[in-house]
Every structure is written in structure tokens, then in C-alpha cells.
Image (cartoon, rainbow, N blue to C red; front, side):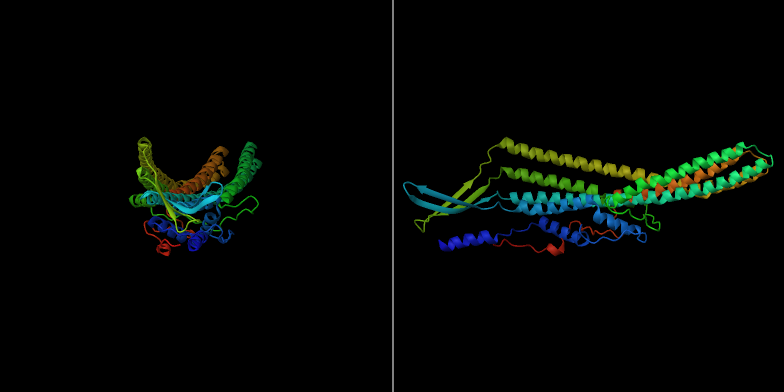
Length: 454
């Protein structure tokens, strides 16, 4: 009895380690692989004016709270695999017979054993859930990268708009001087001077509005980087960086179907629903309990105990299986819907890219050069008294509008490229602090299974 007591005490103090399932080993290996490159507490690169766009993307992915939350959700789902495949905790039991005095005392140990295959099915369902959580983490990281790029391009081209408007304002100042000179020699009325001043006032207000719009854009850029209100505003990268992307339609769409994290998450949900069906079907398998009690006052005398659950409620079992099957059909429908959405988004974004590229070529190669020449001719004609000030102002407005449209087209094209690359194709940006695990391959660092030991 003393030896048995010591054995039970040692068991309780040291605990047990269960046998890892293949899905659990792969999930832990993937988590370890990603954790080597990404950890929310890692040192992040500084976001100063000398840093490139890739430094800002690294910074955002490491510090953005949404990415951190998704990472820890995934890490928690990996730990739940161990919980689901483990046996229930054993139970210590005590039984005593008391008449006038204590006549019998029987301590014991009881263990519940789920029916054959139940723990494996539950572990498979948890493994599928962890894969879906990983792709949710990947989606959050790519979404953050896209938001950073979007705000970066809008801020960069805001400076271009301000520059163009200031150059036009200088041009209007020269036109006002020309109008004053023409008025002094009696060629035009003072009305032309006022018209020039009106255009200057309008443009000055527009420049003030553009400069003021930097504040909300900077706040969005700061938020995308995961910086809080008490941290200083980030400096914009000193050099412009476009998004390199090979827009071969069929190949890029194939890449999207192979790597898009939303699609991969939906596929994982289908696998999770299939595992849930297996779990539901195991509900018809009975569970077992086994134990042993020892009589303290009359050793060596033992009382073995055993029990078995009776899954007799067939309607309940059928409902569980039907619910799991319906869940699978819903997951498959969501996957198909997402595949259609990705295809449509890709087609629309590809068209938007081609449209903006054609518009940009038209503006840069034809409209802006011609508008510049038209303004030169109008200015010379005004000084010669051949055209009125209205035609001169119209030529100036036309050039300004074409220049601003060119900036808008460049901004739109860069955002479309970032969207196609990150949100649709799921291509990780260069220098991203995450190394996605190889799909389907367990990580070698945790490939060694651990046996059931005490």
C-alpha cells in the first residue's frame, strides 16, 4: 500500500505528457517557424526619413495591434490542439463505510476514456481550426501592408499636387503682371487684373486645403504603422518606391487562387467542417471509465470499477451529424463565393490598372505637352493683343487640370498595384518579417514525436 501511495503521489506531482498527433506536430512546427521571424515583442526598425518603404512595412507588421491579435489567436488555436487530443484528468476517489466506527476506507483512482477515435477526431478538428487562424493572421498582416502602402502613396502624391499648384500660382502671378502691363498702356481694362487675382485667390485656398489634408492622411499613415497618439508622427520615406508586379493575367490569377489568404482560410474552414462531421459521427461510440479502489483496513483487497456510457439518443446523434454536414455545405458555399469574389475583384482591378495606365500615357505623352504649348501660344497672343484674358485663363486651367489628373492617375495605379499584389494575389512584400510555413509539410523542428511518459 505504501508503494502504491508513493506511485500515485509521484504521478500527480510529475504529471504526464500525451502523444502528439501529426496535425499538432505540423501546427507547432509552423508556429515555431513563423515565430523565428515574427514576434510582437521583437525589436522593430526605426521609421525615419532615411528608411525605405520596406522598413515601414516591417515596422507596421510587427507593431500593428490587429496583426498581433491575429497572431496570438493563431498561437492559442495551436495550443487547443493539445487540449483536444488529451485524455480527461484522472480522478481520485474515496469510499468509506461507517457504522458506529469507521469500518472500511477505500481510496482509489478513476480514469475516463473517450470512445475509440474520438480524441483523434477532436484533434483533427482543432488542427483545421488552427490553419484557418493562421490564414486570418496572414490576412491581417497583408491588410496592414496594403494600408501602409495606400497611405504612403496618397501622402507622396499629395506633395506632387501641392507642388503643381504652387507652380501654377507662380504662373498666375506672372500673368497678373502681364495684365497690369497691358492695362498701363491701355490695351486691356483693369478687369483682366482682377480676373488674374481671382484665380490666384482660388488657387491659394486650394493649396491651403491640400496642406491641411496632410494632417488626416498622416494620422491614417500613423495608425497603419501601429503608432499611438502619444508617439511622434512618422517621417515620410525620402524616396518613391513603386510596387513591382508582373501583370500576366492568367499567371497572376493562378497565384491568387494558390496564395490568397482569404481563400486558404475558407479551404481550412471546409476541412474543419469535415473534421466536425467525423467528431459528430463518433458521438454514437460509447465512452468508458476504469478505476481501482484499495481497502485500507483489509489489505491486500482491491475493488475494480468500470463504466460505459450508453449513447441511446439516436435523434440527438442524427441531429449532430446533420448539423455538421450542413456546416460543411455552408463552408463549401462560402469558399465558392470567395473564389468568385476573387475572380471578379481581379478582373475589375486589372481593368482599372489598364485604364489608369492608358490614361497616364495619354496625359504624359499628349495632353500635358499640348496644353503647355497651348498656354505658351495663348500668352504670346495675349501680349500681342490677339486674344482676350478669358482664353489665356482657360489655357492655364486646362494645363493645371491635366497635371492634377496625371497625379491622380499615378496615385490610382500605384494603389491598384498594391491591392493586386497584397490583397488579391497574397504576395508578401519584400523584407516582410514573416516567413510563411511550407503548406502541407510539418516543420522539421518539431517532427520528433513524444511518447506517452510519466
